[in-house]
Amino acid sequence: KFREMKTSNVIGDKARIGIVLVANWYYPLDPNNERDVAASKRAFDFDFGWFLNPIVNGDYPAVMRERAGDRLPKFTAEESALLKGSYDIFMMNHYGSRAVTDCDSDRSNTPCSTLLPGYPADKGIDDSHVMPGTRAGVPDRFGNNYCEMFTGYPPGYLDMIRYLHMQDTSVDILLTENGWCGNDDVDNYDQLWYFKAFVEQVHKAVVEEKIPVIGYTAWSFLDNYEWGSYGPRFGLYYVNFTEQTGSPDFYEPKPTDLARIPRPSAKWFKKVSETKCLDGWSDVSNIKAHSTSHESKTSTFGIVFGIVALATVVIGIAVVVVYRRRRSGYEPLLSRN
Image 1 (cartoon, rainbow, N blue to C red):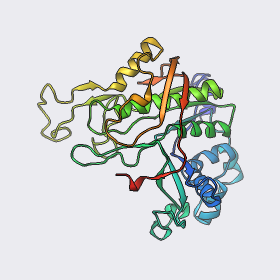
Image 2: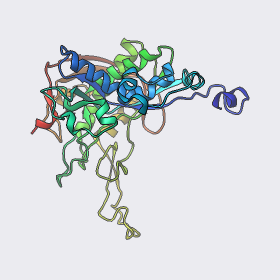
Image 3: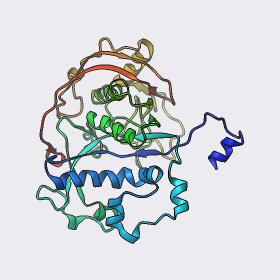
């Protein structure tokens, strides 16, 4: 229908259509272990390939066909042809990465017998491990950890971008949601570290690897209602939610209720948009982890930016000179103090 509308000039000839996909990047817990390598690929096929493969290749990933059998719908030849190539642009949401092993592995924290029938059992992985250098969300002052599922590992972002690009090298990529799930701290320096480190990966993709990324969108402008509560805070601007926020009694708010306070990341984005450079903000390793003791081995210097304005809060293509130190091995997320 979109193509018909475009041909008949109902919509502009520059309009493009695509699907926004979301997934973690999955590393094998042991890159020298064949089962771990297979588990990481399977995890990605089940999370990302489930939706990407049909529009690129006209069918679901082979491993899904193998494991789900007749429970997975079959496309007719006509449906497959209609799906294949039915996009003009790739769009991607990404927040974090995991290190995975097969659920039957002796290193698995998730035995296969505990997985629910259907999708979880078919997928058959344990993704409770993270890469060294990962930062994970921590509890708020009341002990609520709304962000436990979000694990920030910058190199995984570049690996995701590379993978998406390799599916069709002729297609532009728009990086849609990307952001840090924080607690109720206003001065959240983990968030600042996250945005700086992840934007570095965008630079590498565009400048060093010549991947056609046309824009990057930070999530989110403001703290908002996320995943069933106001607890997870992704905003560049802190919002002063109160106990009355969202209640039937919230008719006469105080002047300070719902006040919007810029976090360090908001000031950073403002500086980038105005100066197109990051003088004075150049050493990521000196950005103290305000809400977690998990250290990052990331450092950066000599940064220059170009800007592309998109959506509400968007930065464009980063030009970054990066020096990065990496550790080897993996750390189980569940064992962190």
